[in-house]
Amino acid sequence: MGTKTQLAAATAIILSQSAFSADIETITVVGRSDKSVLDIPSNIQIIDKQLIQNSGATDVVSLVANQAGIQINDNNTSASISMRGFGADSAANNTLILVDGRRLNNQDISAPNLNLITLDNVERIEILSGSAGVLYGDQAVAGVINIITVDGWDDHLEVKLGGGSFNSQKYGLDGTKKVSNNLSVSVSLLHDQSDNYRAHNKHKRRQLDASVNYDSAAAHGYFGINQQKFDKQTPGKLTKTELEQDPTQVNPSFVNDYLNTVETNLRFGGGTEISKVWRWDVQGNYRINQGKSVAWGGAEQTTDRNLLELAPKFIASFSSAELITGIDVSYGDYHFKGLSRRNKQTKIAPFVHFKQPLIDTLDLNLGGRFASVSDDLTDANTYPEGKTISNTANAFELGLNYRPSKAQRLYARIESNYRFAKLDEQAYTSPGVVGLKPQTGISYEAGWDLNTQSQQLSINAYKLDLENEIIYDSNAPKPDGGQFNGANVNAESSTRLGIAASWQYQLSDTVNFNANYSYVDAKFTKGANTDKKLPWVSPHTAKASLNWFINDDITLFAEHLYTGERRLESDFANVGETLASYQLTNLALSYKLDALKLTARVENLFDTQYVSFATYSPWGNGYYPGVGSSLWVEASYRF
Image 1 (cartoon, rainbow, N blue to C red):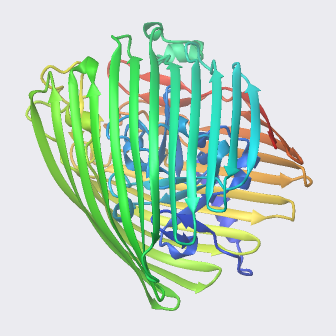
Image 2 (image 1 turned 120 degrees about the vertical axis):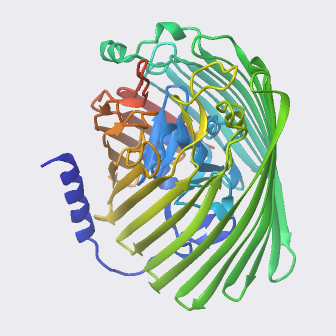
Image 3 (image 1 turned 90 degrees about the vertical axis):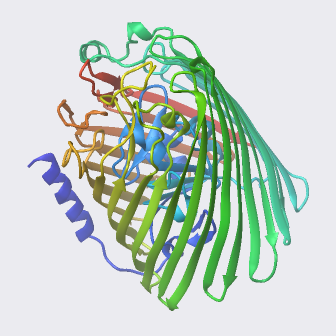
């Protein structure tokens, strides 16, 4: 029996074993407003604090890799999270990452800085699969991942120590002091470093996070600062021969490459009730990022990034209906000094979203958003005299959410989405192309969820159509004065047709089983590459995990991940090789004794050799190896 047949059979067995049972309480998610998971006509997955601790995962990427429909792309410098059939280069621009509702995505093509997030301070992670253009706007094309941090009201002082393979080390300290019934102060310090799997791939991170929180019956507010210094050596791609000889080696051409960043985030917000019906809320963030790097053996580049974001909104709750209206405003100033490029981007996007019960068991969701963007571009090569490019885009939502019982619901939704070109995408286009058009799309999806005392089952089907998808094409004519081949282009139309199924079952009082399977058919629908598969998208992924609570103090966690074969990134014509599928197994053991917690995690238990990212080129493919078997041990004590 082939691999695809085995996966289909396994999924059928999982679904056939599901049954209806008693109701369970729903979970509240945090985003634009507080809602029950079953009140939102979308596919929602929740990773709670218990699972975070039991998994032994050391970062967000390792944690979310176990969720349905998610693929991870790692070029040994930074990782990006891909959802719903987007390749590696597109993943960071089409999946929106939030921390407590604040955007982590950048206005240039650099991936969200996931290094800023330490799992020690994460309460839960909410994963919304599917377009969310109305509520979240730009880049919420494939889905939204919202990382919720601890609330900062529990008095404590916690010390953390960790170490493991590749000379990995971690030291952490965090604490919260409740100054009064309405005021608390939290501080967190972290230092971690590792030589990592490959040569010339060391990293060192030092981080400070501090916040002041106010909460009363009348109002709430917060102010926080996060500052991080992150240094990493970047080993570059390998040829096929180098990969087979020694996947841990550094490419000789990149022995001096590195990436150093210093980032400061000032976050603030608050809100209060205006009346019994209305309340208002505002979130803001000011980000300063300074970076130095050497890539591809070239000269040192220095980059200054400044980004201000404001998101005020008003929420009205009357009877069983809810209205959310607000406006998202951002201003970014990016100075790429080595490229003699300074670009600025301003975005303004008002929106409104309305939920109205039609009957007791059926809700109607309606929403709309209008967005405008203005790019001021100055580039010594492509726009030496400067150029202003303006664009607009719209998004709408129409959804139905039907709940025949408290334990289950069915939903159907149509939602449009958009993505504006990033600052550095606009500045590197082919001769004669002045400005890229906004990428636009429409998503159709339907699903069924069942939540009972013993199991949770979710089945979701979707179709995502895109026009003018913004991609980097290595075969496109490079800009006049361009420093490397290719250019950013608006691609021909593409579509993604998929289905995802997940099942969580309580085998006994002490054993919990999770399994999920995702299939996506992602391909071009127009142009020279019609019916060609989109590169770096695996049609089949499957995951299974087991949580065994051996006793009140000891927990064993095991997970097995399958990633199917896929084309190399940039192989739009499907003329290059296809990478083989691979499987990974991870284990974790947790022990808790009063205030002491010990965790040990083994990743890639069987030391599987695989490729975590690869690019196609007619001049020679580039490969980035996945990490071999590794061990991590961590201890924490809470005073």
